[in-house]
Image (cartoon, rainbow, N blue to C red; front, top):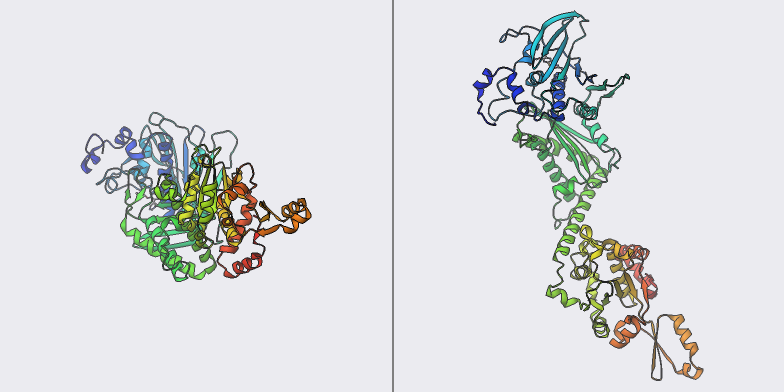
Amino acid sequence: MNEEHYDASDIQVLEGLEAVRKRPGMYIGTTDVKGLHHLVWEIVDNAIDESLAGYCQNIEVVINKGNSITVKDDGRGIPVDVHPKTHLSTVETVYTVLHAGGKFGGGGYKVSGGLHGVGASVVNALSKWVEVTVYKNKKIHFIRFENGGHTVEPLKVIGDCEENRTGTWVTFKPDPDIFDTDVYDYETLKVRCRELAFLNRGLKITIRDDRDDEDTTGETFIYEGGISEYVRFINQGKTPIHEDIIHLEGEEDNVFFEVALQYNTGYNDNIYSFVNNINTHDGGTHEEGVKRALTRVINSYARKNGILKDKDESLTGDDVKEGITMIVSCKHPNPQFEGQTKGRLGNSEVRKLADNVFAEGFEKFLLENPEEAKIIVNKAMLACRARNAAKKAREITRKSDLTTTNFFGKLSDCKSKDPKVSEIFIVEGDSAGGSAKKGRDSMTQAILPLRGKILNVEKARLDRALGNEEIRTIITAFGTGIGEEFDLSKLRYDKIIIMTDADVDGSHIRVLLLTLFYRFFRPIVEAGHVYAAQPPLFRIMHGKTRKYVLNPEERDNYLATLKPEVRARAEVARMKGLGEMDAEELNETTMDIEKRVLRKITVDDCVAADAIFEKLMGDEVEPRRDFIVENAGYAINIDI
Ligand code: 28F
């Protein structure tokens, strides 16, 4: 502990509650509003323990005018008989003697709530006054303490009551000399009262604030469904992905364990764990046991049902907890709290109990509810893919170092570093790529040739596409990064021009690129940076003249301008691909800023491409083959 070293013998000697007044922080953590509220929980915990013992059904908490607190329970009533050791009544002993023994031996004082017995005397030590009224043995007993726990009105009978009327009422006023503030916060007290009602199913807890004049009705919490109702409460406003809340419980060696969970469509996990109603913010063995079992059971279900293939890596703890809302509650006779704020459960035997109880129950649930099981497992699969995609995105963005040699192997960058005047042509095939490099304006035009092999991208799994070297090169060339790392201001070109053949392969590439842009670079498309080059479709030759036109109507219009005898001799050829033009022609017809025609790509084009992509690259083979066959003839008209 702090300055002096205490040992068990010193505790007995300490002048009763004086020690507590000297070092309140050692008993209630702080003397700010949190410490003020802690006093309430020490008293409420005693009432809750009486409820856990099975004798109390109702607890009432009132903030009185002047910020004193009243807590009432309908338990058996603190015993009023004379205590053998101290020759004082039990109730007076409970409120004036610091209980030595287990709580203090070894590692010093525990700050956490739920210290049965020692809590009440600590409240007394830190209060201006405390009054205890006990309804027991058909009598009403009353005792009052002042100024840190001195008995000013010894226990006496102040009236009669019905035999079946039993319980304990405690009113106390915290000592303003000890606390920074003596103003209670209703909302804080209400939230914890509600939580206690969730954690102790069937217990009715009422809270009321009487500080203002009007008679307030207060709020009552009672949850027969206990922590299952807590899960439903937390999932309010979220969309569950399965109707029933899964509830599992078990007991072993006097340790009671229960868990409730429900997945929602969100991406965050809401996991809360408790030991003896104390919130273990830092988790511990109860939570670890559940998470370990959850991961193991979902993986084994996914493998047994062929959702996870042998070659697939296992789902991680993060994957399986995405979108989960879960409450873990453990009741333990001798909890070991660990960590700076005692927020972690350390009892190792609980890990196995939690694992066993959860694994057995959850496995049974998945087997009995195949629909829900599929939904839950698929959600974890999606989480896994997203995690991988995000990881690849980070890798790419990190590794997107433009100076890497192999990178230059592919990209012929332009000399200008000014994004406003620079443009990049993504060209299909090495031959066209070669001509484009020759014909370009190297000051402002960059060329990135893509080989047809980009088509081997895993069908429909664009997140796998990030593994594709070519696609990685594109991402690096753009400079914006992708996913969470995306930053439009880092775009290195004003125009991204897709230049592919007007044939089926060209359309495939264009579809794939637009889908890629749609899924990973949508802001670039939305900002209007993406274009499709319009290579000529026909070459009209007569004499030495070579005229390239974009489409049938331009062809017909041009032919109409020729003299009949010239037209008769003119040769019209359908261009098969970019490769048919030399560097100069390619530049003249498709690249030269003064002459070329570009079509700006819109998000709608990408949406259409995305849909086609699914057909082209989706899992079903049929739709792809049909699509290609029915569209092959009009490949030029896949107008995207
Ligand atoms: C509003 C606060 O403190 N309720 C309590 C009981 C009941 C018994 C009890 C409490 C001495 C040290 C064991 C009655 N009859 N509400 C409360 N209700 N303490 S505190 O016993 C105290 C004993 O611990 C009780 C039979 N057994 C126990």
